[in-house]
Every structure is written in structure tokens, then in C-alpha cells.
Image 1: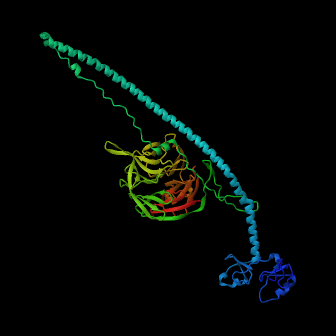
Image 2 (image 1 turned 180 degrees about the vertical axis):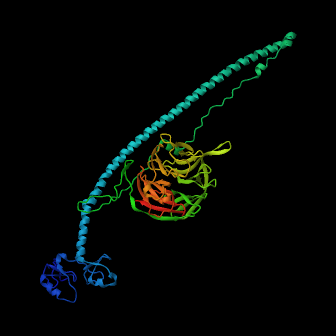
Length: 577
């Protein structure tokens, strides 16, 4: 049995067996009474570290030199070491701090962390947790409101459908009455003539039987009165039900906006014990979408290129339009090429599609279903690519006295409800924006409230729809971006910032992001302008070595794709958190 222990497990001095020793050698791991401390330290064959018993084990041994205690902390390796470790190659040139000093510093850090957790982090999490039931209640209230609105709209639609049915039935009743009246009239007329014919037959038989020479010689035929028979040709009415298109019915009835849930990550600095939470940069603007809280994303300090895609465009076949296909690929088109190409984000060519006419596509866009559509300026058509082939869906050309005329489509975009917005110019130098649903023209935007043209005649123009349903047009000839609301009423125009750029503002490609910010390619100043949804300038992207930027689009994560006309490159830029 260990001599330091007895049946009652009483600790004893290792040298004299005095019970309950008050000291402990942290290197030799033995218990000592105060009287034996001197004797133990007199053994100079090894190092000793005698401490009060309650502080035993507080000084770790060196993992490399087991008989040595850790007296220093290596700042580079972030470990405790002994004095012997200092001279080893492993720690050559490193900085060292005394263990006691490091211990004191770490205690301060721990105290600050504890204070931060107790005073700031924990209460904020509690506050956030307590807000969730409020959000749930708001969601339930909003859902009930939407349910009521949907049911009411459904009842209105049912009433309208019933009114249509009643009108059709009423129209059919009127046609029945008219049809029967005509048939009754003809029946009476034919019955009368049949009676006359029967009488005539009787009279002619009597004449033949009479052998009256005078009457027979005086006979004049009147059969011509009966040779014309009026026969009605009636086209019976029929009911032709239109095909019920479930998707179109859904859109015509109304749509629910998509659920938007965005996470705001709060950060703060703890400058003093009473410091409160402070958001980085400028405070985000709080918006409410469908009863949920959404916070505007912030700009990164410096926009940066996160990908370069080299394409076969460039030189005489400049790279123009770009359209994002989800977050994995992009469609692009050039200035002297009938081919539209799809690249993945590894810079690999995935597939190509040819225009139907063989002309250069003026602009391209991707629909909600992922189909590629393009405008053919020379052929005056809008086309969609299905099953590897282009199909004409909208024709703007007209033939008058052998001459082809009409409108020429320029820029195109697909809207949030899958309409197509097309900006077009006429041979008469007029410009307008037209909204199409399928083949049907739903809206035309051309003049302001005073009858003046909203857009300059001719030239290159691009178009996009903002998240707030505004329509944004880059009008190169006017040196202006024109923004109208969903109804077509002018909201504002942006003509650049003349004192901050070397050359005149000439807007080319235009797009918007998830925060309703408007991004504009300034080709001749080699930069991108970013505006808020009300036309206020926010910042430039002018540090990414852009050269003649032309086409723009963003993906779902607000990464910006920019085409460089002459270089034939597509740059993917991160400009927002």
C-alpha cells in the first residue's frame, strides 16, 4: 500500500508521514509538510516546484521535456513551453511571453467574453427569440387576410363566369325564337302554296276531261308560279369552348408573390463595458415584404472579380448581351455572329443555338421557365429557342404595297410574371415599350402625360424590370436611363454624374438586383453605375479593370456578370454581401 494513504485515506507527508500535509511538489508529485520542504529541495538531482497543496497541478509540464515545467508561451505556435524549448530549432526566432503574464492576459479575455455573453449576446438572442412569436402572429394574420382576399376574388370571378353563362344562354334563347319564327313563316307559306298546287291539279284534270276546245286552246300555263321553291339554309349555332389553360387561368386570376426570407447578421464592437450593438457601414433599410422583415444587403468595401470567363468573342465580333441561366450558366451573344452560346461557370462552352433567320441577335433574355428568347432587328421578329431550334413568336413586320415596314425590336427582358418587355423603334423614328403575354400585346408605353416621347428615336436601347415593377430603359442616344412605373408613367431619368467621369455618360447594358438597385454599364468610362430604386446614385464599380463594358445581368445571389465588348470576356463581380 502507498505509505501516503491509510484505511481512512488520510493524506500524509511523503517523507515523515505527518497527516494532512500543506505543501506539494508539482514536479515530483509528492505531498510534503512544511518541515520537510527544505529537505526535499536539497535534492539537487532534479528540479522542484513546491506549492501550497490547493494550487497543485496549476503549472503544466512541458510535453517535450517531461521533467520541465512550462514557464513561457510561444506566440507563434500558441502553446506553453519550457525554458529548454526556447533554444530548439522548432521555436527559433519566435516571440515568447511569460506564462504568468499570458495567464493574466487570458483571464482578462475570458472576463471580457463572459461579460459580452452575459450583457450583450445572450440578451440579444433572447430578444430575437421573443420576437419569433410576434412574427408567427403577423404571418397568421397576413395569411388570413390573403385567404379572405383570394376567396372574395374567387367569388367575383364566379359571378363573372355565371354572368357570361347567362348571357350565352340568353343569346341562344333569342336565336331559338328567331329560328322558330322563320321556320313557322316558311311552313305557312309552303302550306298555302301546296293548297294552291292541289287546286291547280284538280282544275287541270277537269279541263282535260271536259273536251272543251275553246277552253283548252285558251289555256296558259302558270306552273312558273310554282317552280321557285324557297328553301332555308340555316347554319345551326354551335358552342366552341376555348381550351382551358391552367397556367394562364392562374395568372389571370392573380398570383402570390414569392416568399422572401432574408437573414440579417448583426455584428457590433465592444469598445466599453456599456457598449451597445452597432451595425457595420450604414444602417440597412428595413422593409416589410408579405409580413416578413427583410433587410437591404450592404455593399462590400471594394468590389472584386471572382471569376473571368474567356469566350471566342472579341475583336470584330464584339461580346454584347449576357443572360443568367440560374446560378450555374450564362447565355451570351455577339455583334457579328448568328450563334447564341451557353457557357458554364467553369468557362466551358456547353451548347450553341442558331438564330432562325441567320441574322445577329439584337438582345437576349431568359424566361422564368429557362427558355432563351432573342430579338431579331433585321427580321422584325421576337423568337424563342425550343428543342434546339428557334421559333418565331412575335412578328412586327407589315407589308404595304410590296414594301416591308413596321417596328424593329431592340432590347428584351422577361418580367417577374413571365411577360416579355420589348423596346422597339419604327421606320418613322418612333420608340415605344410593349408588354406581351404570349402573343398578346398587353401594354404600350410611348409618351409622357403631356404627350411628349419618353424615349429618343432609333439607336441602341436595353430594358429591364425592377423588383418594384418599374421599367428601366438605357437610352444611349439620349445619354439617359429612363425609368417609368408599371403603368408607364415617367418616374425619373438619370444622366450620369458629369463632373466625376472623363467622357459623356452613354448607358449600355442595364439590370437590377434583389434590392431593387439599378446597375448600368457606362461603356466609354469603363465602369458600372449603381443607383437605388429612386434614381439616387450609390456608388461606382470602377476598380475591376473593366474595358468597354456592354451587357449586364445578375444571378440570384446578386453576383454581377459584365461582358467586355472588345476583349470578349465575361467578368463575375462580387459587389454586395
